[in-house]
Image 1 (cartoon, rainbow, N blue to C red):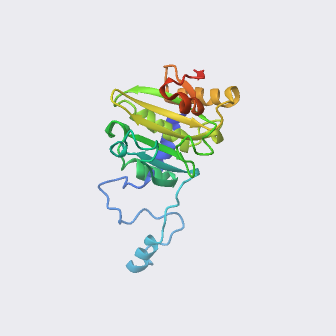
Image 2: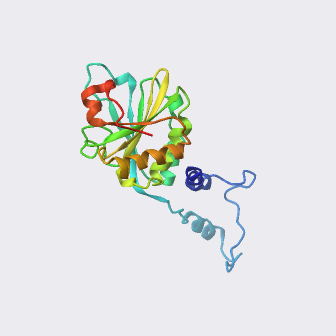
Image 3: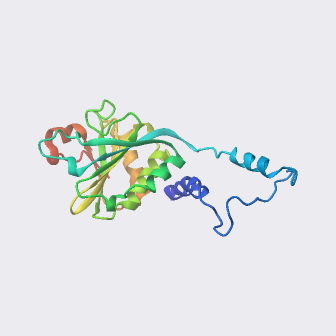
Length: 234
């Protein structure tokens, strides 16, 4: 499946940061490459040369920002989104894995938490100019079962897996008492056939999801709240 190949490629840098053989010290001499002169450098020169070698990062096409909406800071009186905070912006494969491996996955988040990953400078709010005319596809999963789908969604985002990638704003995983939801936000809700349906179908395929998923306009959600109905379904 395409996302599995993407996972392998994006894992290269994560694995590359580890010592491939735990029985061999990282500072031991490696096999000389063809044409390399061996034995003519003293220890200080050799050490200095090694320290000067810097692995090049693998840049992403877009920078992305993780946002967290802390459930303990929410209240019914507070303005929606007022407790939401940007956590970190990353721009390379290495930075992504460094963050992902050191943050709680959805199954470990507190009930009421919302964790977002959006393109840099796009806020995960209806009021953001880029999101204002958009909507979202949503997948609903049992409590504690969204970790893999969340990872695959993140890899699809940062790996530019979608045909209409410019339409993508970001994604959010929402942890609730009996279920977890992953929503994929897009820019132009009214563009049904050419963009929204294509994005929904691709996302379902990437997640290997057999359930029906629906698309809600942000405008409907603002007016009707939980009574908003799906405009498109796949």
